[in-house]
Image (cartoon, rainbow, N blue to C red; front, side, top):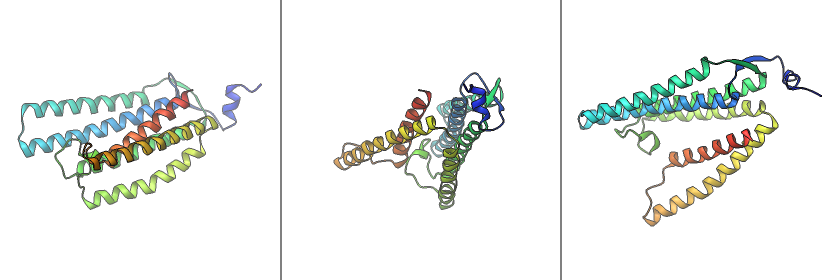
Length: 221
């Protein structure tokens, strides 16, 4: 009977990787920590802009300190997960798919940071709204998204096994149904006058949260 190590060798030479938790879980947490750090930086920029516009108050320093603590804590945790780890054997295909997850998180973080720092608004949460951004920042975000997402998705799909492919499909189906429920209901509620105007990015974040939750749950099953 083929053991686990022999199965790993079928994909190529084994390499050292972190232990203590599944590699996919560790890389997912690193991506989440990176995004939290980016959003914390955007929040700090928004609070600072609001303080400059409306006047600096003691509360402003408290909000900035909270943003620094959140962003710094997320960055520290992400680095500890990546650098301060014991070692185990990881197949090259697994390592490559995990690297794609990291790169995807980095791309999303850079796009979010550029948009957050260039948003023409003093709202700390303007990144998630329809507030205007400079044309150059919008063009950069569109180009980076169109250029990177299809390529990274193709590489990732080529390096996952059948179990993860099934988890990905289940997550995608759940995300589609979430969108089918959220978008029409929010739009009709807005037209009816009892819900705020639909926000595209908020819908996107909710749908992606549903996808990631189902994907991670099915992947762990």
